[in-house]
Length: 330
Image (cartoon, rainbow, N blue to C red; front, side):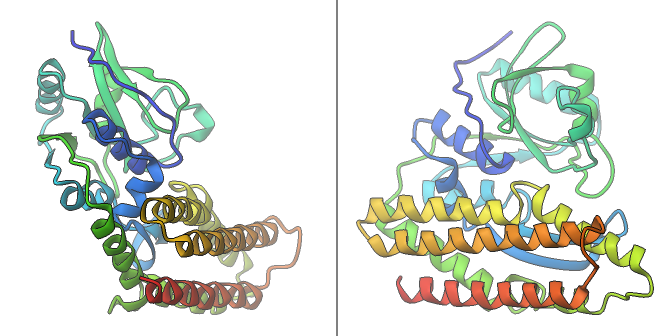
């Protein structure tokens, strides 16, 4: 059984944590915020036609795998993705890659991973983790949201890899085919920031970026006070998507701010550190919005859709001003 030397680090978010660990394993030091920012992962999306438990998808980052794919060009890094039609084929391929010395990334369901505490399991199929070895009855796993590596039984991991439903992983695994290269920071950092500004300010789809925030505000403003239960479910869903998926909307803003601070040092441009501080304050405002919405859902104050919609519109205006200022400084 193979168990290559591997350094586990706890991270804020699974995909950026996994990617930064893979890059470090290939020999290039990279923090989680740098992996997140360099791949231009920050975003906002309100997608009413994609349903989770009957409610619309609200995302605060780019889609799953965008961080993995977003680092291929700046790092000159080749990473291979594979899916499988059968659990047996998926398990055999994973074993062969581990025996060949690879550290292997997996997309899994959170619900079927037995090392998660029972009250933290929910049906989310886009959780990322790394497998770095195998034992008699299971696999050695670096799950970035845990403090220490864990061991997972083979049957349980297989069930998590082939869970059904929205974002079904279909056994997805990925591994580095070539080592990452130290990039030209002066070229790749401004380019990554420009992409993020374009996503937030200029995407044609009105559901993405700043326009998506205002679109969600309009949906909240239309909530009916006559059906308070349904309205509270919608508001509670916003809070859950904002605070429990990944690092949450505010959390992703904090990671991007840390990226801007690193960029300021690498490029010798203090202006990016000033932008980082502004983005931290925006993240704090998202947290305040979530707290207000949660209080309304729990009847600690009256449900007021118009007040929540006004707060969302204010967030949209604030993020627009921020990304316009960031774009001007590039």
